[in-house]
Image (cartoon, rainbow, N blue to C red; front, side):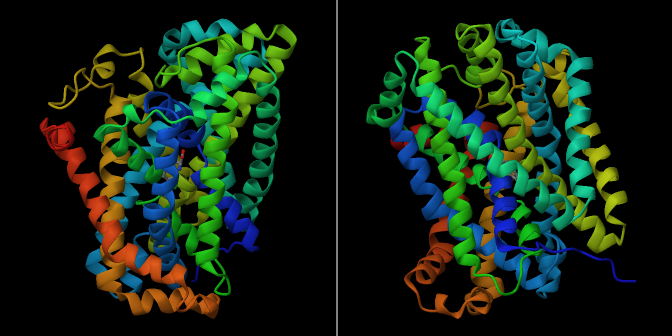
Length: 465
Ligand code: PHE
């Protein structure tokens, strides 16, 4: 019996869903604090360059593999005739499960903060530690968030994923614009804009370049087959190079806009920009409080609702990867597959959830040779999945596309939707990048991560000083 896989019903639906996967906590939570730590605009410029030079070609490759085979991340490699290369898909499944396991916890914090803002509890910023250690409350929000994700994924590709993206993405966009316009009217807002737009090149070190690379890759949801999976639902008539370019533009666009929203807010209170991961959860509630109780509730709730929406379209894509695998390869009905996988991933996320205050030993889970302080479990999973597995997956996908599947076949798939792409400069660039630039850079990122963090060999500072 053939199981109905589903399809995106429109091109714009696909773009919004894929951009929804890309736009997430990475853009709105991680990007601004990395900018804050990495010299403002200098970091932004590098991030933009990496998204287009390095990530865009991998994005095209993933979509092409998916669309050609109409299969999930594991099945796709076998369908092309290279069963051994399914390891890339399995690696992607593991990465997806690990990422979602802790991503859902951070999403739950964001959603919890939305509720706190609605009730006007601005003091929560000073109690971030107490909030995250209250495992019953965070557990409840995690269950709500994972259930919302599963509910949408269970409804299928066009009826669930595409429909949610069509509602959430435009709403998110309008919310960001409203918040930017408002933030720019605050006192000292333009100091924030200046910090954001005037580069401080002295802050650029090997580490900052490396984090900009990693951030670009994570931000576009690459290296784990999310885009192979979404690509498998794309119409044969679409021009996937154009779609990939649009997805990249939306993703970097939202990251850049997030900066215009956050830095004016932060500077309006004269607060330090290098607040690290706490920039949003610790710093911003205080900023919202200063707006007065009425306005603070509106702006604060809007902000954390926006963050939750951004996270939701990403958790949907993370859950879709293992779900599609179960549906295609194990012939399990979509709704059943979705809820089983969601339950497993929720359980896998419990140690991460407990590692921010509830259980001390999980809060100082491992001491790695290359990292000064012991890492909480959540950060450790992030290091393995985001920083190590994703670049490895991206490296393998590039090598596979260029040298195993072969460029002729890759290019034929690109041209099948729109033959005008054949011989264009864009296609020439994608060819060169996927054969040389992507494997080399992604291979280096992977090696640096392993040497630096796990073995304590500070290779970047050895080479670059
Ligand atoms: N791109 C998402 C973000 O920026 C995270 C993500 C990574 C989602 C990998 C899916 C797959 O938050």
